[in-house]
Amino acid sequence: MKKIIILFPVLLFVFSAKSQLSIYRDNSVDYKGIEEIRNYHLYNKKENPSCHLQVHFFYPVSIDDKKLQTSLQTYFIDCFFGKEYSHLSVDKAAGSYANSYVENYKNDFEQSGLYKQEEEKANNQGDDISEYESFYIREKTMRNTILFNRGDVISHVVNSYEYTGGAHGANSTQGYVYDINSEGKISYDDVFYEDTEEALSELLLKNLMLNNRYPDEEAMISAGFTSAHVPPSDNFVADDKGMTFIYNPYSLGAYVLGTMEVFVPYSELFIYMKPECTLFRWAKKYFSGNRLKYNTSLLNKEFFMYDPNRFPGFTAEIQFTYPNAYFDKAVLSDLQKLFVKNAFGEKYTSYPIANTVDTFYSEMQKEYEDFMLSEKVQHFIKKETENSADTASLSLGKDYVQKNVFHFNQNDLISYEIERSDYTDETHGTESTAGFVVHVPTAKNLAYDDVFISGIEEKLNFILLRNLMKQKSYELPSDLISEGYDPKKILPNNNFYFDTEGIVFIYNPHEIGPYSLGTSKVKIPYREITSYLQPDILSLLRKE
Image (cartoon, rainbow, N blue to C red; front, top):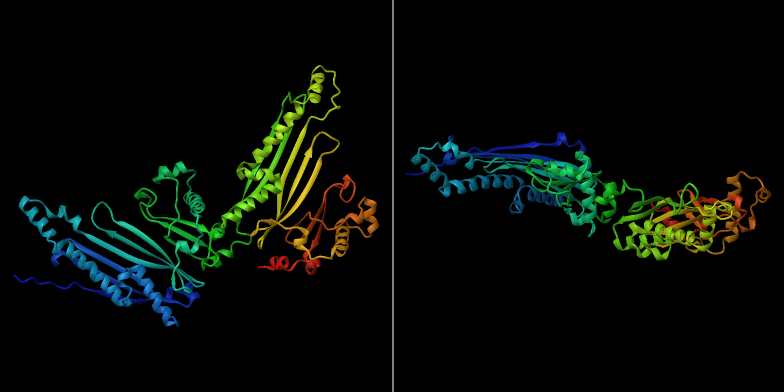
């Protein structure tokens, strides 16, 4: 018997998306849409199972640069239909894809004879064929959405739903970011430096928990996640605020989780991004400082060897802030060692930086214990215990405070001061402040000669005196002398830091006058000393 095939209807609609494009105009790229719908019942019998395909495809048009338009259309076809269709025009690609979908369906169940075998088996056994028909039903819906079209970047997603029998269909979302300049897709490796996966994974986990209000990792596991680990993905989209990483069902855990999208702002991604990547320009807008992140170690402890009601002890309060993330791991390691050296000394650079504060405190405590166990102190404590000692004759208490305070963190420069106070029951303790200017790329402290040109010391001396008088509201140099300052000692030195307004020179107690003056800081505004700065320093300060 001659088989008659009735052609299935083809519905083809071409429509304009310009009404929706007001927010997409920046790249001077318009978009049109094409829709393909296919319905086909096995053996062209409406009572038989069927396949259904619905395609909504947006593609770029109306680009002055026709070479770019062809490149973009090829890219969009590749993303949506697959590379095997990218050599075709949009209309032909859409039609060919739809035709192939139906032909594959026919090959699976008609040409193979599988459905006929099922039908004959059901008839022979007296079964209802409809009980098995779900196995032969196929459905697919595809749509792409333009999410961002600005600043030489086009970002879009392809959403698809496909049912191939079974309990439920499968949803899939694939993100794409296109760089108009390079005429190609921006991949994960294009955006991020190597060896940043662990840091990015931590960011993704933090933002996933925050966005979904998971209080802890245990709550994530209870919700269906396989583990509290979110690896970076090459499936992402981007806009002018950040990147959204996409995880399709089963990627992170149970199907019930669905498609997970984790947005991470550029302010958190910036330090891991390659400057040559187009997305970096957007990221830079949200980050004004250096490409560093910081961690702070805090310690606040009390230690008593004897009855605290009768004998003082040792108290320590230490705050140590240091860089803990940077795109160049070698530079980060050198910076961490420099911060430790500046704060605690060279010998502590061999310890893990997270343990530095505890190690420093432990050694101070050991020194205090040795002091308290010394013969002189033991003799004193024995007499005090016997109520025969003069309690004012020996200082036993020790209070130590240290912290670093940041003043400048941009243009490859970090500037901060370390304040220390060491009080040992004397008339007054020992106070000191040290200023630092760190050049980030070289991980070096900048000295006076690195910042200022030579031969200007006398001029700086005059500028320092003038600004100190202004800060103190003094009218005459003699007012400084009356207060106890020695103008001859107010000279430029290697103890200084930068802030956003100028350079601050630090003079510790006794350096320019009596102890009662305390620590003196004299700020010189940048505008007064631009002609005295080294050219490379001036260039860094003026850098946008």
